[in-house]
Length: 390
Length: 96
Image (cartoon, rainbow over all chains, first blue to last red; front, side, top):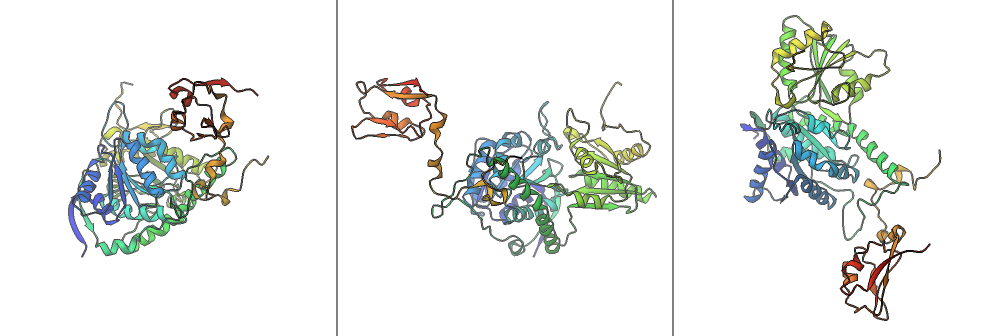
C-alpha cells in the first residue's frame, strides 16, 4: 500500500533515490541541498541501500566521480546547489558530451555575492547551455516522481544524457509536505534496471572522452545537441507513463485558469503554486487570466508552449534570475526568441521577482497583472520589489 | 563549404567514443615538441629515473642498457631532464 506521510521534501527525495536503487551516489553537502545527501548517506551506512556512497572533498570531485561511475555503467545520483553547481560547471559539460546518464537534484539557490543561501534560479540559469535535460518541479510530490522519471529519461537509449531536476531551495527542500510514497513494486515497474549502451569494459574496450580535434569536435557537438532535441519526445512519453502510473496530469507545459484569457502569466518552479492561487482569485472575481507553467526547460518545448498560450495577447513572464547586461531575464529572453518573427506573437512583459529569497506574496501577482494590462511595467524588465529613491 | 570532418555526425559513436583498440598509440604527441632530450652517455648511470617519471611512458631501455625516448611520443616536456640525478639529460632546441 502506498503511504501518505508528512515529510520534509528533501527526505522524500532521498527516499525516491533509494527506491530508484542507484549504484553510486557522490555528493558534497551544500545548503540547501544537504538534507538529501545526509539522508542517503544514512541509508547506505545502515545497509538500507546497497550503493557506493562517495564522500568527496568538493562538488568538482562529486561530478567527476559521478562521470567516472556513469562511464563504468553505474546508475548514478548526485545533488547540489548554488556555488556547488558553479564549482561543478566544467564537468557538467563532460557528462553530457560523453552521453552519460545520471540524475542530479538541484535545490536552486542564488549565487554570491553578497552571500545568500536563499532561493532564486541564478545557479541553474548560469548552466542553461550544458546540454543536460532540465526539469522544474513545483511541489514535494513532483520532486519525488520526477526523480524516477529523470532516471528513465536519461537512461533511454534514444537519449543517453544526464538530467537535472530543479526544485526551489528551502521553499521546497526544507518544507514539510504531505507526500504519497508508492510501493517499491510500482516504482520498479515504472523504472527498470539500467542497461548501458556503451560503458568501460575490459572485455570490449572503448576510449571515452577522447581529444576532439577540429575535424570531429563539431560533429560531436551536433550529435549531442540532436540527442537533447530528440529527448523531448522521450520526456513526453515518460511523463505520459508517469501520469498513468501515479494518476497525475503533468505535461511539458501545464496550464490553468481561464482558457480564453488574453493575459497569460508564465512561471517556472514553485512560484507557480502562488500564482495558481492568484489566478484562481482573479478568475473568481470575474477577471480572465490564464497561467502557463514551464516544466521542461531544456530542451525548450517550443510547440507545446505555443499551444499553451495560443490566443494570448500578453504574456507576463515571471523570471527568478537576473541576466546582467541583457534586456530580459532568462525565461523572457527564451520566449522572445521563440516568438521572434511570428505575426501572432503576444506582447511579452517581464517581471523579475523573488531574487535572493525575497518573498512574493499572492497579492503581488494580482498587482503585476493589473500593472501589465495598464502598460505600467517597464518595456525591458521590472525588478519586482526593488527599493529605490528614483 | 569546405569539408574538413572525419565523418558525418550520425556515424560517430555516442559521446565520440572510440572503439578501436590501441587508439591512444595513434596520437603521436611527438608533433608537439620544440625541445628534445639529449642524453650524455658518459654521465648516465642507467638508474631508470627518466623512464619512471616520463608522463608519456615513452622512455625505454635499449640494447646497450641506456634509456632513450621514443621520439614519436616524446613531447619535450623536460621532466626526464629535471629528474635525472646526474643531470645527464639536457633539453636542446630541436633542429628542423
